[in-house]
Length: 304
View (cartoon, rainbow, N blue to C red):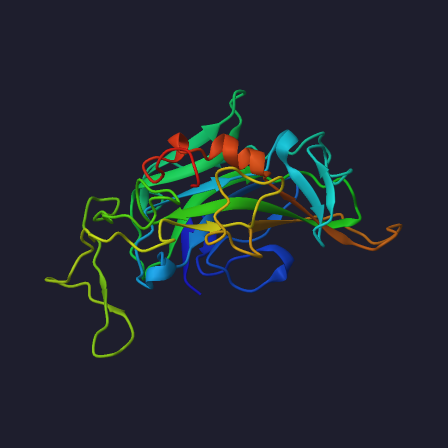
C-alpha cells in the first residue's frame, strides 16, 4: 500500500471503496467517513487511460459530480428506488442532501487548476481538475472535502454516496470525433513532456524515464476509439442526453464514499440494519458537466 499525507490525512492511493463491497477499483475515494462530520478526502487515479488502442495514455484531467438536493437519487442497497430529492425517506436529518463540497487550490494534484462548478444559488455541484497530466505508471490524488450528513434513522448502517467521476484522456473530443486525430502532446503540471512507456527487454512495459527517452507526440490517426475519457459511473437514473456512450459507461460501477452511522442498532428495525445509496441523476450530469464546463476536453455539447 502506498501512502502519503495531505494536511495530516493519510491517503491510501491504491485502495478504492465502492458500492456493494466490491474489490479494488480504478478511480475511488480515500476511505470511509463518519456521519455528521467533515471528510477531507481525495479521489484516487490508479492508472492511465487505455481504451481500444491498448496504449497507456496519460490522464489529463478529471471531473466529479456529487449528488445534491432535489436531483439526488435515493436507493436501497439492492437498487430499488426510494425517492428523488428529499431525505431518503428519513435516512438523513435534513430535508435534502447538502454535502457542502469544496476543492483545493494549487499543486495538490497533477492538475494545477481546480474549479468548482456551482448552481444558481452558489452551491458546489461538481469539481473540475485540469492543466496537467499524470504519467500512466504513477498513481495520483485529486483532493476534495465534504460535510457528511447526519444519519437520522438508526436502522441505516451506512450511506453510500455515489459520485460520477470522469478521467479525461484527450482534448476537444466527443463521441463523433473520438477516433479523429491528432492526439496532442501532453505536459505535466510543470509544463514538462510526459515520457512514453516502453517495453524494455520484454519485461512488459517498463517506463524509461531517462535522458533520451521517447515522449508522447502527436499521433496522426488520433488516440483510438473510446480513448477520450474513462467514465466511472453507470447510466445515470432518468437517462442523460450527454453521457450515454455505452462503450464508456461502467456497467456496475460508481465511485463511492461510505458514510458510517455511529448510532446504528438493529433493535426495532423490521428488516434489520440496511445500507442506503444516493447518487446524481442524469439531469444533473446534463446541467453541470456540460461541454462548456469541461473544456478543453470536450467538443461541443453532444455525446460527451
